[in-house]
Image (cartoon, rainbow, N blue to C red; front, side):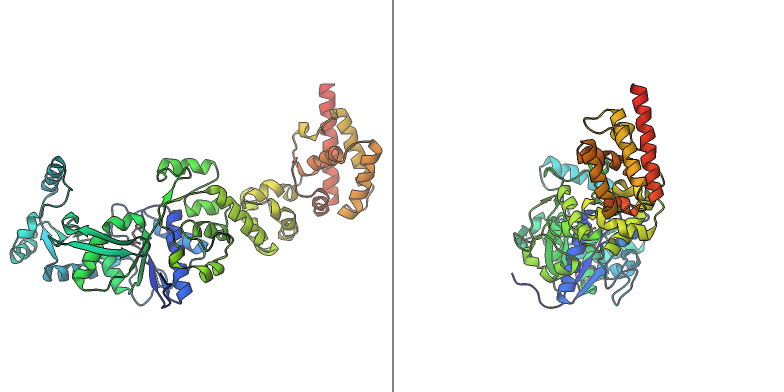
Length: 501
Ligand code: GLU
């Protein structure tokens, strides 16, 4: 297989039926990469003809999620383009026109069978252990007679007329040629009784009119591929290159994730929906790197990719059709790598809303100074307020027990805190250079370990047992605030000693 060098036209064609899934993000990413790599176009088409499954707001979420990922399209419902409209619900007349054309060419027919008759035929086929295909009843109706019945207002659908004999072969780029007996292909409904075209017709018509060269879609469409090839050939159109991507399996690798399981995931801070990942503190760079490698690889070694690097390195022949188990540990890994690759201002800007959401009022200049201290400790952006919230509040509320140093009693710990206060309050300003040496001297003098003395100071000032580097942190907090926190700690320890004593 060689990389197509000619500019491609690819489309991402989601149905707005729910939240935007990782799988959609990946399909859109591969479309985007191929378009950008070849200097072609990436098109967004909204497939909203199934009005029963339509979910209000889903289209907006799709657009927001793709924009968040940074996958910008060249043509689409919101940006327009020469082949619009790009929303299938606005293309009803186009599909009607092409459905009629198929009828005129003898490749489609009106069907008047009622749901009851169809259900009965289905059950009988099942009893005979045959495929539940449409029995072809209305194929026999004379076209002029059928047209009269339609004109008289009789309820009907339009079906594709699959050839009765022979077989159909069609090639998928990743899976090779598939051949199916035509007797096993259903006379699928192309237009429903409400006049709306179904995917089988609408997508084929749109892909043709929009000059799509490569159809990249989920492998759930593979069983319909021979039917789609037949429809395209019935029109006499050229087929696109077909690429059916691998499916995503749940982390255990066993089966697809159910709705219930994806809801449970959220409790662990993970999600299969793009919008949730944003809320959970993942960054688009990390998510993109992660999903890019779920079904594609560059070589066995390179793992870290930015979007421009992916554009440069992407090729269809490295796609892998095997199912991919979703691995959230890898997501954390990639997110951490990309967080650390951001420059200070960029990371500070992205962190600010997460601090605010956690209830902190953020001074941006201070945040910029905090970022270098916490960068290594942030896997997801929501980690930051947990690690560094103490910079943005007046007081901290440590657990008094945590102020007690290992191997010391509360009253001994209180003594350490008092001596610490004396040392620090004697200094005109508190920074790494000025505060650390006298504190080390105090450790010596008291015959304790640095861990014991600095541990008390750390919990007193940050409220946490684990924190960014202690003296660098102290440097960023106003002197008065540091001293107040230490003196609060003295009181807490004295109270604890009294209560126990
Ligand atoms: N609307 C279809 C879906 O969301 C589109 C598949 C395609 O890309 O053709 O599954």
